[in-house]
Amino acid sequence: MRYSRYFNLCRFERDGRLYELFGVRHFKRFASAGDFFNYRRRRSEPGFRNITGYSSAIEWESRTRFNELAHLGNLIFNLVMIGWLSFRARYTWLGPIMFLNLFLNVYPIMLQRYNRARIQRIRLARQATASE
Image (tube, one colour):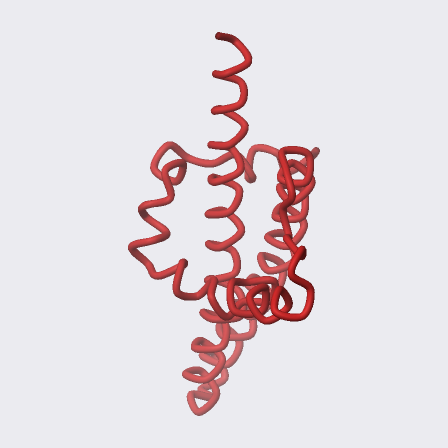
């Protein structure tokens, strides 16, 4: 993939503690396909799970890349808009757009990277048990 270097996690991201420090686990509760919505869906479909095993975790990892790329594109667009509004001295809209950008793009990007780190830890654990 062309953007594969971007999607590689840095060393400080791999254990997930940085994202937990920023509150990603709290954000995850109310994100789409997050804990709250999964809980509600499991009440009507007790067997429902987003990830049912190793192969579905690997599929989920590819979805994290797509979702992150979509949020990254939107983040860049909004940053350009924030720059334009600043240049045009339209300060009334800066606060709301920056706030929305944080919760609609920055946190979802961090959540995708957090989830990918969790999946990579699963992958490494499986490789370790397979090599024993």
